[in-house]
Length: 167
Ligand SMILES: Nc1ncnc2c1ncn2[C@@H]1O[C@H](COP(=O)(O)OP(=O)(O)OP(=O)(O)O)[C@@H](O)[C@H]1O
Ligand SMILES: O=C(O)C1=C[C@@H](O)[C@@H](O)[C@H](O)C1
Ligand SMILES: [Mg+2]
Image (cartoon, rainbow, N blue to C red; front, side, top):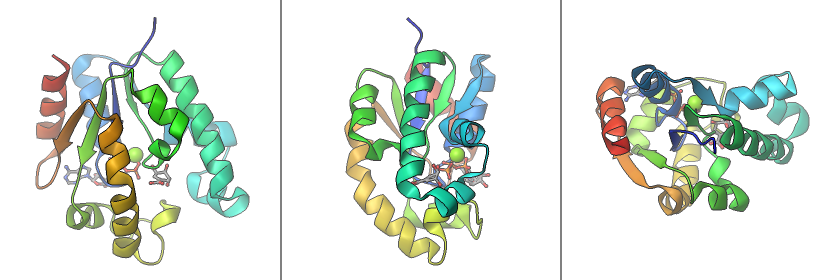
């Protein structure tokens, strides 16, 4: 049965895409990101999906992308930051190898900065991030097989720890 080698979860700015690409490179497998899958399926970028169709429609597209990716992908998979809000997704993750890339509010806010591609963070980045991280931390913890702290560390070092957890 096909299954991802590892699934990376965590809030925006945790480094899922950055670290995921490195881990995939080092394992010699492909990297897949459900955010990219949603954009391809919808034919528009995430910021526009939120504006034109709303968050609920985005979450439906995201849930479908997660189901497809888990069934099809045998490399490294990164989920969108809010994918774990879906109870069915959390159930699906229980049988997978899941690494939670943890990050403090300060480091996450610094990393995402004023990037406008994350619609949930527009306006008050630190306030929105804090609310979202407080609400989601228990959910990330619930489905993670391993937690890797990313604060003050460079992506290469974090990728090494993720690889170590797979051995
Ligand atoms: N360990 C790190 N140290 C410093 N900067 C980092 C680190 N990891 C990622 N970054 C930078 O932080 C920004 C966000 O990283 P990335 O896009 O990988 O996060 P993400 O978890 O995929 O976020 P999202 O949930 O929005 O997809 C990027 O500019 C990236 O270069
Ligand atoms: O944390 C979130 O809810 C999100 C994170 C991003 O990966 C995207 O999936 C989108 O911007 C929503
Ligand atoms: Mg990402």
